[in-house]
Image 1 (cartoon, rainbow, N blue to C red):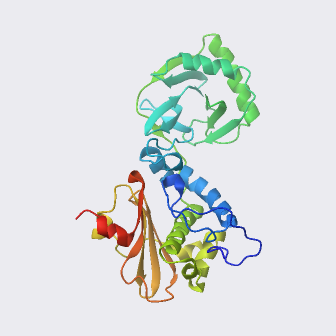
Image 2: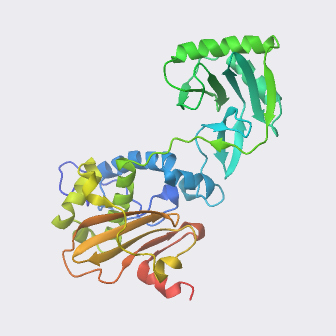
Image 3: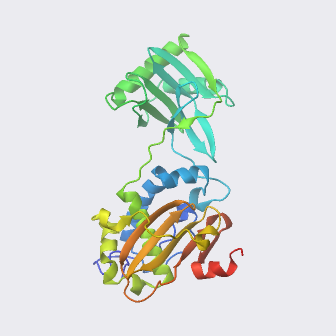
Length: 337
């Protein structure tokens, strides 16, 4: 029986769920049969959003880990609109914690300026121009109101054309028409080429909504199942919590900012940048606090405790930097004195 969908008919159990997602360094898995493939499919969609567009994603770009929990490489961001010290716009990615400019053109006030990373050189601009002449591939739009009206920002990355505007009033077809016209003007010498080596400010669209909170919430339920068992987490006491996680309904009931203090000597000595989940019994209510990278915290009221557990804190720690995971009781045995 699935700890999320319980005895819903037709559930299958081909895969296994990580306690903490492997995308952020989680290693241990729940036993097969705890989480159905239907729940896994749902979580994959929610995590894709959380680990690419939320504050957790920001941490993955600057701190780590990278793909599938890689320690060597940090996650690479998607293409973002960036601004430079001189106020100009550009396109860039964050790769292994380092800004990298993408060759791009910026049309504003009827002027066209091409820019690229100084270390890459002008040849990357000319290569981009050559491809754009006959481009008919995929276009991804980047909308940011800070871009001037009637201005257009565009560049290629991994054979995809990125187009930045202040709104979506210009169609892809019209944008491509303007870009190809700008390419012709560039070849006629009516454009400015520049190198950028100033630190950039990435204008990333950060999302912190109910879907992101559900990722935190399902992590709490995963950890609860791991440190107890599947029968415990299937208690009717947690039915409302699992309904919110699977449907998104009644979101205001479950999430809350911490009104209790887990910032005690235990959390003060947890591994650097670790992810963790701690539980505590507060007057018969099971409270969970889920934390990513040591400081992104969300607290939840899971439900009434079916028994007298969690008078003392319990939980689970993912020390992704050192490729180790601990139940709280095991961490207390090895933590620095």
